[in-house]
Length: 411
Image (cartoon, rainbow, N blue to C red; front, side, top):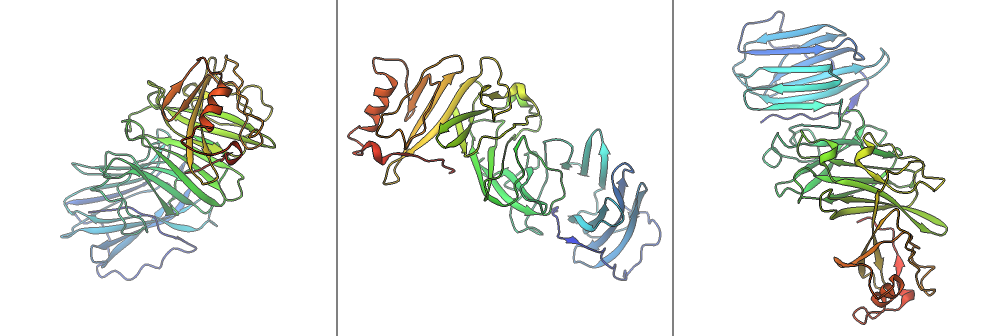
């Protein structure tokens, strides 16, 4: 078993202990260790540390910018390797980039930290497994155990051909890791100080004080693992994204992420829905309490963005985009009532709430259909107002209008 994990940043490189058997020149053997540093990448120096599996010191080598190194070392047991790198200028700090443990002596290790085809990758190869950390795209793979991290994602739960995705959640280089568990459900862990670039599909602002992390399980789709929204404590910004379990997937094969808006005086709300592209089945949603001034999407044609009229929403929707949104109603006993609203942006149906609850509920516009408890209610003899009123006054719930409030809920 081998693993990779990140350690805390250190201000100075560690002082190498005296090797029991100093490595003064390459020795022929079954193991080849090669470290490549691309001169275009801002790494000025570094150290490679080598130990056996019991922690016994074997030696080290210093890395200089732009130079290549290789060791051929005769080993009769598994070993571990730690790579310390200094990135940027000479005044920057060293940090432990990675530690590999229990590397079999009959395997070759190829360790690369450099840009190739717009990809900054570290790769471990043998006859059966490839480990790749891809810093240049939105795909991440890593095989990780809890040996050096406080969180556990074990190899038997997460095969190497499954994907783990990283996303920055703090200014101090803390990252979120998302993966499927043994039941195929997405899980997340927080890992401190993994030095990868920020990976997000769209960005509502940087998260400075991480508060909430929400995952919508979508195990019914082969190419969709999780939809994640983070909310900081001061509600200054949000970040969301989706992650695939198939590394060959591209954006068009994924479910649609739909942004819409709600009106509630004096506040504004934005809803984000995730839907199956084929069936339009709702997979999950999140509500955001502030409409972002700008939405930055890398591949806009695969998203459906609603509202071209609001002054504080600076993104032009696609022609004939559908508007889909989910909201939750709570009564005074905290009983949750679910309802789903859908519309085409070229249809103008106004849903008006009774005066008794107009100040408690969000005023919604451009409604085409109302979905309650998975039952579709389309155009019928009842108006939308009558239908909603009938629903709210149903004896099954035994509540009055004033007991219902709209909740901008994260669950």
